[in-house]
Structure formats: C-alpha cells, structure tokens
Length: 115
Length: 114
Image (cartoon, rainbow over all chains, first blue to last red):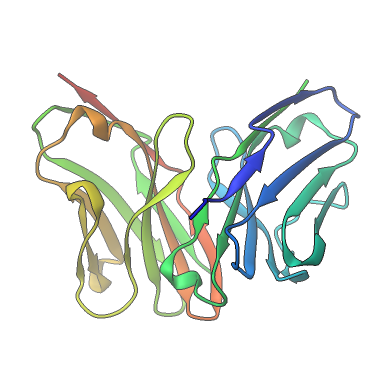
C-alpha cells in the first residue's frame, strides 16, 4: 500500500507570507495527525482528525495555523502569516480507526524555513 | 500528563559494539511505549512498541527494548551495531487505547564509526 505522502518536501518562505502543507494519508485511515519538530526540540503534537472532524487541536500553537481535512481524505495545514519561529519539520501521520496504540505511519515530513 | 527523557543527544559507537539508547518516561496512566527511527531524508519509522504483556519487546533490524515499570525506563539495545544503524532515534509514550497522542523525547543521534 502507498504510504503517507506529504508535499512539498521543502519550503522556504519569507516572514509574513502564507504557506500550505498537504498530507495524503494511507487510504482508509480515519485518523490523521499533524506533528511538528522545531530545531533542537522534541516532536510535538499539533492536532488530530477523525475523518473530517477535529478530534483534538490542543497542540495548535496559535490562530495563524489552520488545518482542514476535506471529505475525510487529504489534509492541509496553512500557516498565515508565517513567522520565523514556525520554521521546523512538519510531520503527518495516519492510523486506522482508534488504533493509535499500534503506532502510526508517518510521512517524510515537510521542512519549512521562514526567513 | 506524560513526558519522555532521552539521555544523550548524541551517542557514538564502533561498528560491532553494543548499542544502548536510554529512555525514561513519566505517565499518570499505564503507558504504551514506542521507539521510532528517522534515517536521513526519510520519515519516522516504527522500530518497536510495548503495549501490554511481555516486557521484552523485539523490533526490526535486531533492536529490542525492555519495559521496566519500577525504573520507568524503556531503553533500546542492539548487540552489534552496523553502519546502517546510523540515524536519529526517538522514544515516545502514549496513554494507551483511546488516547492516541504521542509524546516524544528530544531524540538521540546514533553515530557508528568503522
């Protein structure tokens, strides 16, 4: 089966611009997660979708971040306007139903650099 | 609340030597524990997991980890390092079924020299 696909793999934008990251989960996976790793820090949870609904968005840093999941398929994470501290690697992961304890399948990540 | 501490941001070993990557956790509920590996330019790959049952868990590529509740530890080991093991390793904890959010440690970069 195809894995979790993220694009772009890299993005360099200027402070104040808008960037949209996309994640295509494994087909049939209801759970979709976004995580982020800021340089030198640990990977942190951002939010969790179950199908098209946000199950938990407690990790979203502020209202400059907007996540959507159209029709329960792919998801986008928009940062608007981007700030320097948003630089990092954004990971997407998916899992089947409520089987998080089996471990997710992660994508390769999007490396975002804000200059 | 949960947290994970990985001792050592970098660990260096010689090829053929024992690999030991340390992970300690705190959790207010019985934890599910994971080790992930990230090779350069790749995503996070699950190495092994502990949910319930046997406390010694075997994973891919010859790695294993032992859950020690009394020590709140889940250290990762491999008897003999290979050059291809050079990567970054992450320990993570989850509160278990119904709570699927992972809390990660800061990661340990494993360097393997010939």
